[in-house]
Length: 385
Ligand code: GLA
Image (cartoon, rainbow, N blue to C red):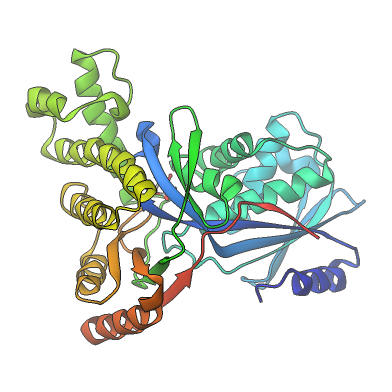
């Protein structure tokens, strides 16, 4: 049902009110993994999987949240917003956004919000960012306020960090809010400056879901982030100017790596080299040097898998199996890690055959039928008419 007219009719029938409609996309990251919270570089694209939001005001002081995906409607009192806490439920994401907006001084009115999305959950394609950004646009429309895209992304990241309790960086919310059709984005996570890079028309984005799920809340993501930050603290004790690994070099690791835990040293090596690869990848894509693009993706995957230990057997196999197939430019695990999806850049003319063959090989090896999607880089969040 990637159709906002359907969501509109459902909202009308459920809440007896005419809604305004908004969409926010998920994303795929081409390269630059676990670099965002080190103030480094990332290169994602918004994709044509998205969350749709339909919103209408209500006069009874309630917030009604309905998710078509969960088939569930919940009600909350507007007066309770200032003291709300996360409850490990899907409503945490929209309520987190409302809570951050309230904290910014906006008076929150009652409203009914219907949500539906097709971003596969927990697969590294940022379903939560899409949900947050769609909610933010919808709620802002009711309170008649707006923010420029970068600030909108920051507010949604804060909803996730401060309310939901996940220590994610800025990448997902930023690309969901600011993506551009047919483009990837080189984002500098230090100052949020960015450069849009056209994806050449002969290149297809083939996203292969290992069907193995990961979770960013709790678990391995915060552990990795802490290891990265511990490595940075060691370097900073010698070079006080280094407050994030963005400023560190491979030489720093050679000099002071022995003072770090074995894990921290490896994680830091991934982050430092990944930043260099991401900038080099953007330059290679701009030049149309697809050999270099592919080489950097392969190197990035090895680094993510071996130094960062953010991959898993299924994702490594998905990347490995792709290497044999005609049309491949480059493949790597995308997103937060520990499962989820690989991104394959593939010659457009061979993308369908590639997707079929990869699916068959993976199913043959694991007995799991993967979902493989040929995606397109899409525009960022916006109102729909
Ligand atoms: C998740 C987080 C992002 C980023 C990636 C890893 O998607 O939400 O902020 O850290 O993992 O690159």
